[in-house]
Length: 169
Image (cartoon, rainbow, N blue to C red; front, side, top):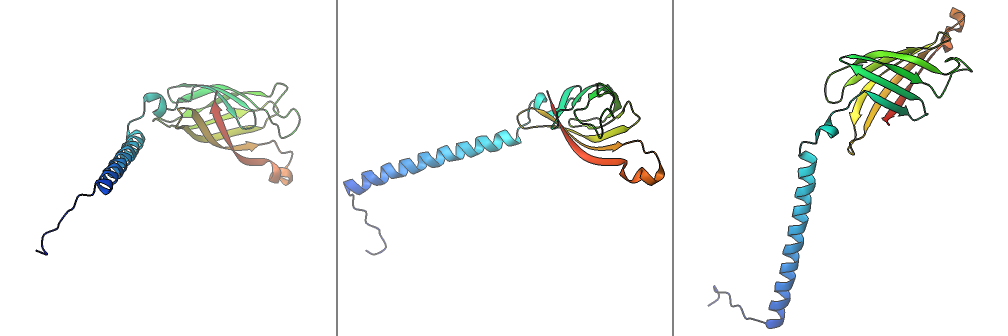
């Protein structure tokens, strides 16, 4: 009868097929568990430490400047110690200035702060505080430095713009 399949048992093929089938099933099972674990970890709610960026604390940027700030509600205050100057002693003898600013609400808040340097220049930063995957915090900012100009004709070179990335220490 052509409509019925006949299966003949071959001990060698049968044992190898079963072993290979078990191996493949085990491998697929392990792969599926691994992908489920990865996707579950990515979509699960992270802990509070991982989700809330706290602006209060000590920060250091890529150039070595240090920022010490404390948030009190929406207000930010502290001290900035610059590692760089536009010209010698422009920031003052100790290169330290008082910080004042504001911080937004939320888990990864926006922030703005400014300083007035000893020789009259002023700097302002605006940015946002982010939480990294490892739980570390980073403050990504855009800055503007306005140096004092002796005349309107020399004004063209008195404003500088750039980016700073601060890492919490």
